[in-house]
Amino acid sequence: MTAGAAIAVELVEAQPADLDAFARRVQAAFALAVTPGAASGTAEPIPSDEDLRESFAAPGAEVLHVLVDGERVGGAVVSVDREAERGSLDFFFVDPAHHGRGIGRAAWRAVERRYPRTRMWETMTPHFEVRNIHFYVNVCGFHAVEFFHPGHPDPHAPGAGAGQDHDDDLMFRFEKRMA
Image (cartoon, rainbow, N blue to C red; front, side, top):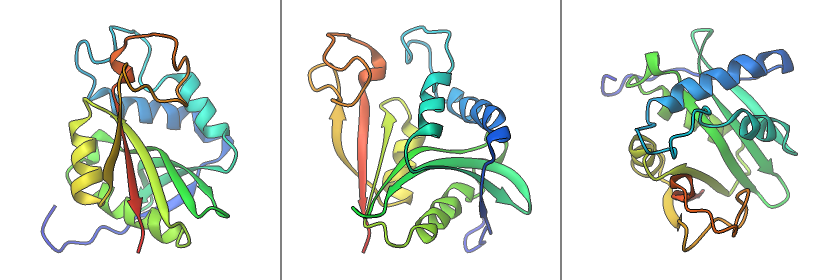
């Protein structure tokens, strides 16, 4: 992206008929970071269809398309607890053909503007998602606040405490406090 060039993005709520295609686009974007061994050799897409369906159907969840000049170039799944003024960025992606143009930065700013009363944002990403870690910390201003691993499992993860030893247990949790 050229320094100073502003990308105008629009956030548009996805319709139920959009969700299957949205899920495929999330999985295509996430597939770029999956390295051999990173997902315990599973043939299932990352994130799984089940994880995506649960996220789409979660109480308060909004599935959002990111548009630039009317074209769908990414998306987000956001859940906001307006009473607690807390938001969760459950999924966030830019389609691979549109990486490196500043769309992610502009889209995140649009999410912040859409939910101006949210005082705390939270998101998570796997340890091998170096591009995401850079984006959340260095671009968006999140802070790594917790690292989940077999010795310190995520208490909210499916099968938590079941003694599983998987790479998908290796997750960073990030928070961003808004001014």
